[in-house]
Image 1 (cartoon, rainbow, N blue to C red):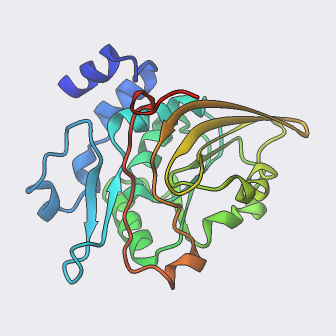
Image 2: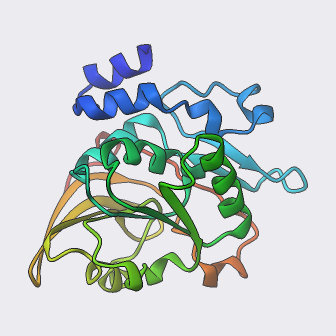
Length: 238
């Protein structure tokens, strides 16, 4: 509860529906017991949910609560919105989103089979397997067969030249995409709204995310790290 008060006080958490979602969805159920017992999970920092013991450098995290608050609020979710999420994040962000859009379909695209399996187990533990689907595929492809999407959330860094196929899957009636767009070092978390065939973007803050993991990249990567998040105040303007 103290964490939520802190997020509200600093202006990150404004939507009362999301406050209730944080209270209703237990983060602990999306983290293995062996990890939750060794790390503080209810702090405003990314939380580890996957660690390969044979390779301790390989890890995956759930985003920090302030970043999750920004993500979900900037999507402008309504109760019947269909939401596509690129990158599983253990299913926790999708579970929160379901509280905001309980009548819509939510689909997670995850390139890593093991992470997808972990996410499915977490959703079943929380009785969300009927409400949230996990598909193993290259997230850059989106899901054309299920489009249009009222909302699309991208949880890893993506270069602008990879955006068009995803933007074309947005609902032309004010569909919203929220993504960290930029190079591998620094990105702008950007909200894009589609109105007919026009796209209107607004940069919200600078962040540092690792690249979105895609099926193509999996064969080349042995180190899979998730995000390091930084506030815009850590960068000089201009």
